Length: 487
Image (cartoon, rainbow, N blue to C red):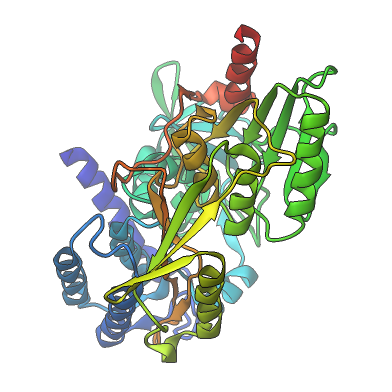
């Protein structure tokens, strides 16, 4: 444990000591510093907004816990900081809310400057797997070949390579106590994390293993506006029938049409009703025995879309509860969209039943099975740490009503529910950082085990090695095929 703390300390030291070396201009949004008084004012407004709006206060931690947390944070702000430094410090605090729908992003000026600025990029793609950092390949396949794919990198510019991965996980916001999505997004964003923490150096010095011996390679960076990402995705299947606006696609896995794969990439707000009607009509017409729903990397989207899909899949009526403790957005000087919030409450009142308990308004809606094209046969759902929000609504109801078997990894969203539906963006007055704060807590009423802070667990768990990832294997579909054969 001590060694990990020391490694993290090295990262934090680099973060706060090298930032000013990028550019010398004081008016550059990337390096401009804000005084402790300005930072404290921003945190105080952030705290006030969170305490007035956020439905998670008191669920995973007590209100007094958060009072002490923010007071301690405010008192710690004794030095001037850049926007990036302040954002990362704030993310450490936001992470303690255990809510992945809450996050703080850079100001518009910061993003605009970032897009126009050339940075130093490495000539090797890296990927952490099981706390080891591997080389995926070189930027130039002909010249960048000194480190072969699969080579283990132990240090980058003197810093343990795996410590960047752990640092990334410490600031990624997730629902409850779910670690799987922290690992996944820390892994996929590793290149961005270690480069920004080292402030894009001119030369990257890698220490790596070769024949069980430590070797060193000094590699000059490539200065450019952007660099192509290493593609770990599988080749797109041309057999998919696509509904682009609905962000979903399907294909039959065999000629007899006994198994359909339905890949929902996101729960779109557009054209999904027509797409579902056509798909479920086909399932019934072809007497399809197996439906595989792929929700991997589906970050959510429309609540109406998720509930509409459930109508085709559930065999019984269920309820869903949403509640909020505010009547209007507070601190409206720093946000907008109060009319939309009012409209959302009106929508819930029209389609559900409203009850009030003190300052909390509750809305309960019913999800009834669709009678005409209802699907009653076998369902398999593919999930991972990227399955979040609306994906977890669908998954939780299918799991708790025993309508599906789940294959993959724990979802990124909690099984009991989440904080979402509508989230105003608050702009802090000095740094102009923006934070989204959810106004509703949505409960999956079929889940009765309380606030565990854990995601939907798979019935069949998968584990990807570096070899699996670089060869683009699909372990989840492999298990599904085996289950169907056994059945």
